[in-house]
Length: 443
Image 1: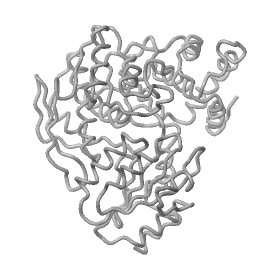
Image 2: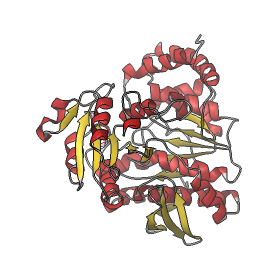
Image 3: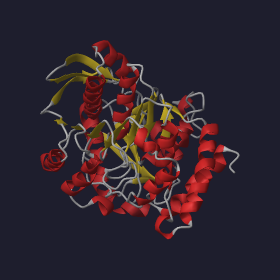
């Protein structure tokens, strides 16, 4: 029996040795052992290369304006391991997680004794735990797919709505080498007659999704064709202003607090899902509800300003597709002053492509670093670029701050695991800004 949260989490992490193993056999077996809670969930399923977490957050906040209790299952975590299973934006209490782990540990031990079910992974166990925990606790559960969709362990329920945010080249060793192949995998979340909403997706990949929707008789709603966003402006670098419209609604001057034009697109997916939910549930929709819901949305580590003097922004642009949007944002919305960029990533990503893209940003200075995580990049992984390398990212931040002028910005970007470590070091539990080795006060 586990007595503490640390013991329970250590048990979960002990399953990391089994890696990522696409397939539904093991998770379905575990769900059977705990009574198939996924069969009673009112859920929404969201897949995509990037933008899933922000879309989940926007949608949760919008649903809560209707008095709906919302559970969310997301990954990876930024602030706390427990946030992966959350209700009303609050992570599962430690005591509840310990109880869950104690319930599921015997099931996992039983499965490990059977050859066909041995080696269930960390993510598969957490998925089943989330379904079980949300049962009888939430009105709606939003599940973010891990990798792909078709064979992802979250793909074990029939949701009321589905969405695919974006399609990019990531996890190609598992999902395929082309965007069309990846789109086919992600389209695996589409269910019979369940509406599917798609975001900004290139035509070839979008057509794959559209064909899947057609074979499943699933109502199809795509950005630009069935709903549109008109970008207005940035709100003093504290958010984005836009207009949303579809055939039934027109909402002007909406604001999201997260920076980047791509956040407008993520918010639009969430709005379209929200409107479809309200239509299904015969609930009234008002602009005031949208404004208040979007205003409360917060997703840590995504273009998040963690210091004002000097201005420091962290962004989990963890793959080439995300870096492309990061570059666009800096080119269009941060053209004043010098942009200092400290980057780190996992060597499983296409680091060369990511660095090549970042180097296209004008008035910028790029440096690289490493962090504590398996497969975190080292200097030898990108020696061809001849960039400044900091073996200690905190020393790197300190040195870059010394170079900055008042109009400059320091961006810390790359792996979400890297961003999580940076953010943890910058914030106390009270969310008061600190910096263990960074002389912010001397700036």
